[in-house]
Amino acid sequence: MEIKARAPGKVILAGEHAVVHGSTAVAASIENDDTLKLTLKDLGLEFSWSVGRIRETLSHLGGPFPLTPTSCSRETIRSISVLVEEQSFPEARIELATGVFAFIWLYTSIQGFKPATVVVISDLPVGAGLGSSAAFCVSLIATLLAHSDCVSLDKNQQGWLSYGDSDLDLLNKWAFEGEKIIHGKPSGLDNTVSTYGNIIKFRSGNLTPIKSNTPLKMLITNTKVGRNTKALVGGVSERTFRHPYAMSSVFNAVDSISKELSTLIESPAPDVLSVTEKEEKLQELMEMNQGLLQCMGVSHAVIETVLRTTLKYRLPSKLTGAGGGGCVLTLLPALLSRTIVDKVKTELESCGFQCWVAGIGGNGVEVCFGESS
Image (cartoon, rainbow, N blue to C red; front, side):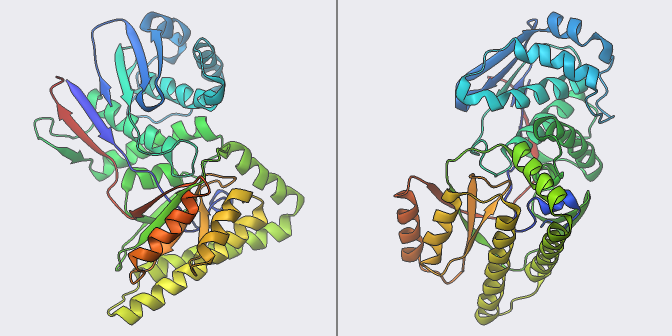
């Protein structure tokens, strides 16, 4: 049987980095050989281990324990490191090692020592601030849990299925463990919004769904400059250590912006004038948040290029995710003409950036069952 899962990436409207410090922030087929394979189809990479080798290296694990999300111990980290180091990574893709590490931990914890081929296909750019690692963890776990028979899903039903609330909670906790392996000290925001979808307000692990009364569209610009999330988060922590009082004020300001932004998104907008006023306030809040991110030291020259370009058209922008490159968000007002949007895209693309328009607040993780062809 073939099991597929899909999970969305994310954009952060407000609250990057500050959420770590307590502020508010708004496919696998089983086969009958003795090998565990991970294929990253878009990147043309494949990694494989004999199940016997994995069992020998991780014999102390016991398990599997799919119903008990567990952090990877230091002993297990050392053991999995041996398995990861046996693989060959292209120099330009060495950052993928932490994702492969997370894969081994999540797979063996939920499935145990079973052969399988896991194929990953992604529409999200890697390392661009759109939550590709969280979407990877969420969709992987959704598939593994579905195959473990420890969640309530009707496998005879056709099409994409959604998980129940209790199963989503289990899935999200496992995804957070994967994110901890990849990023060190993540906030939990990325895996949570990938699991549940829609728009959420998130603070210190607490999730509050937000219902938007107005459709929101964003121009997403991928600067194509890669960055290291763990290093950027560490840099903000170092700056906080050196300037605790100043950075505390920055985080408090971000917290206020996130709270105001979430209230604004939920506020009614019964007519065109109300919608326009609401959009202008959202733009101002995003612009203020970007200024505070610059105070944290996580902007980049290419991000500033995007900001200057969109401001020519009176469209404020902000980075999304860790910063240091990656992607930039620009809110597109409902009355903005297609001609202006095309002009902005053309100018940004002439700088070598990649741009596309996306709605926000879609579905969370889903899983699909079907006979393998």
